[in-house]
Length: 138
Image (tube, rainbow, N blue to C red; front, top):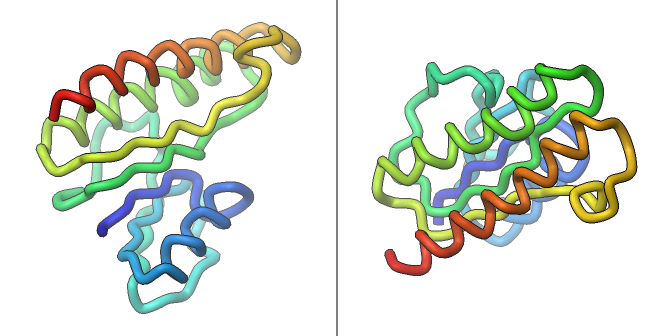
């Protein structure tokens, strides 16, 4: 399976990419930082998920969205929510996607943290439900 992992240079995204690689999958990583992974089945794009000028992403069957920012106002909404929605919709338009995992936060349910961060993660929770309903029909 060919999997796209956003936020793949560190943290949850990096661990996710490494797990898929160790299971024999091809991984496309996307992050604003350079790659921290060296593997023959890993390709890395330095790309901000909020930027609509996407690199070549054909054949992606799975997507794990881990990229995100914590502070700022409009930037948090643009990156965490709108960037995620646009990238997911782009992947859906390509026709190969079968599985999506959006990494959220407990803040989506309990409202703690900063207002724009909470709103972005709450929006991801609702968008994920919408996405699941549409993917289930594919």
